[in-house]
Length: 199
Image (cartoon, rainbow, N blue to C red):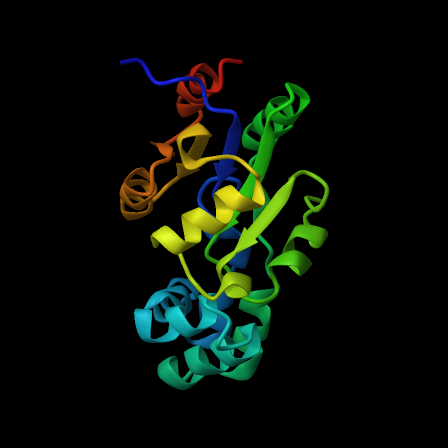
């Protein structure tokens, strides 16, 4: 039986709506003796990532843990963390298109406790009907609890929500939780998303 069109959209932040340009760091490694990619790798290791995205650590505590693990100087962490990334304007236009068509849109992301600061800095605070942050919920993608809370935030049943994310594990988790889900690998995905939302 054909699935009914989705009535709401949940979309990931990093890797879908926000991206980071490695060239933005310039001669960072020469000046600090450590590559920005090494700091990110350290931060994404589960021992440091999990407490940061479930609200047990502040972002500063996460940064301090990265510094301790890598031996990076405090100045390097401060500079690395100051770069906010950039917004994919094609994705942002799609988010606004979906809302203009009368569908609710929620940001559904594993994030540290300063997510709202980042959204304000990037001018995105008013582009969502709900902001669902793992740090505020205390649970993270791809748990069923996270997706249940995200759907509740949009007041839409899971089988009427479309989720877009760039990580296979999160896509699988969303589908287990009853949502439709598309893996982001570029703007061609938006063609399928529009069809799923009957736009």
